[in-house]
Image 1: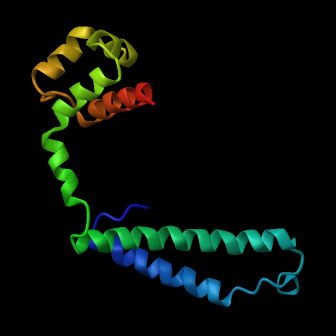
Image 2: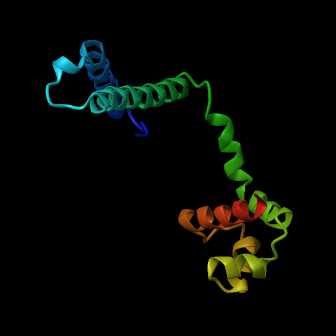
Length: 138
C-alpha cells in the first residue's frame, strides 16, 4: 500500500492500530485454536505482524515526506530526465537502433524522442525505456 493522501494516511493508521490490537491479544497456544495445526496458528500471527510492519513503514515514509525530510531532492532529477536517459543509454552501450529493437520500435522513434527531449513520450514509455536501459546495465 502506498499512502498518497491524508485519507489513506488516516486509514493506514487505523488499520495499523487494529493489527497491533490483534497481535497484542493473539493467543498462540494450540488449545486456544482447537483443530488448527500449530504451524497455521504461527502463520496467522506472522501474517498479521508482517502486514503491521508494512503499514508502519508506509506510514513512516508518508510522515517523513510530510515533514519534508525526503523526496523533494528527487524532483531535480525530473528536469534532467531526458539528458539522463540519453547518457544512460550510451553508458549501457546501446545505440538508438539497439534500444528501439529491444522496445519493438523503429529507430526513428528513439531519434525523435531524444531530439525533442522526450516531449512526446508517455510516462509509461519513459518507464519502459528506463527499464530496458537498466536491464542492460546490470
